[in-house]
Amino acid sequence: MPPSNFQLAGWTTRNHPSVMERMLRGLSDPQMISFALGLPAPELLPAKEFAVCLDRVLQKNAVSLQYQPPLRSLKSHIVRLMKTRGVETSEDNVFLTSGAQQGANLLVHLLLNVRGDVILEEKTYTGFQQILKPFDPRIFVIPSLPNTGFDLEALSDLLASGVRPTFFYTVADGHNPLSLNLDLVKRQSLIRLARAYKFPIIEDDPYGFLNYDEMPLPPLLALDSEFVLYVGTFSKILAPTLRTGWVIVPEELMRQLGSLKEAADINTATLNQFLINEFFETQDFTSHLLNLKTEYARRRNSLSEALIEKFQSFARWQNPANGLFTWLEFPEWVDTEKLLEHALAYQKVAFIPGHLFNVSESRAGSNCVRLNFTHARTETIFDGVGKIASAIEEIGFR
Image 1 (tube, one colour):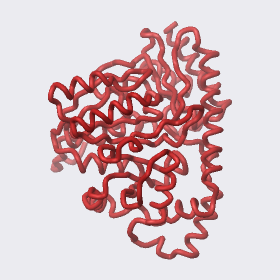
Image 2 (tube, helix red, strand yellow):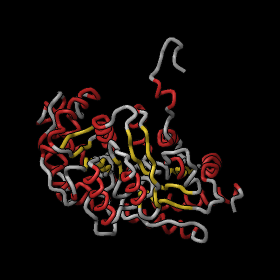
Image 3 (cartoon, helix red, strand yellow):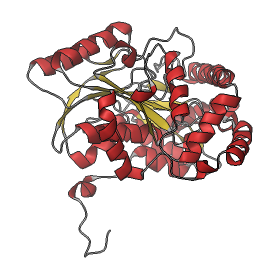
Image 4 (cartoon, helix red, strand yellow):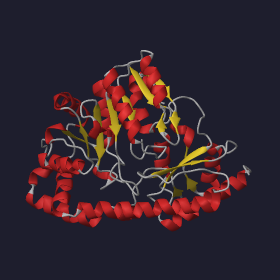
């Protein structure tokens, strides 16, 4: 509790740590097998390459330790990177941020008034839900369909009824938590709705570059650069602690974003900008990304093999084409919140129960779990799935 003479903002009294924040604390236990968080594989982080880059940067760029305007050469690398996803843009549309979380936060601050109207799908990344809380928005919830993504018909009906959202937020590739990709028809239909009803789409794309076995579809931004505000990050494809990402928006929004950014943290760490820029200029990013995708696809397949061995007779899942997660659905009689409590205490294995991603107070998805497959090695994945199976047996769900 705060000191009695402190009066906190009203929204803080209704705010609680997200499940992700709670699970991050649990990583300090070396015996814990964690499928809970969206963590890259630590052994695949390019530490040696960055050590070389850091030495070069510090020797030739003393200004890398000083306040500096956003590094235009890094923006140029982002423009070229986006071109590999079918997006044509320019440095004037790229705004550097301290990770995707800040990018989404800045866009919400740019667009949303207190008590403004927002449409969200039922299952939405908890970090984005946290961004919204200070605004106390009026949220209209549409269903999340586990195989195809948000309910397009429900969204269309809401808009036809007169609801005018400040924005619509979505993860089109490697959806968090459902781990699916929107098909092209749904992408095109969403763009048509945005144009017809004139609302922006915040496209959160932390996983779009991590595609495994499908020809990747273009991001929403490739279909429309006026109504789509794109959020990207280096956290999943280079290193999370660099805390460097970007948004791509119409040029006329840059001044307002700059003011919001100044209020938040002045600027994205200059040293990190120079470091990533040096990596792109002196290291083989293409080979690095291919190595990530090859290894993550192998771990994804290992998770599927382990699930087949333990749960094929009574659970359902799909191998994701993008991202870091697999969405696992048990029968209705499995309460995954109780399962997690038991698994943490007695099996030392962690995951996220599905209903904890709900925007509403609904318990929908309480028989589901989100499993990360990128952080743990293959042998640990098999061990961890076996521990979840043992927890199910011990708690008497079967």
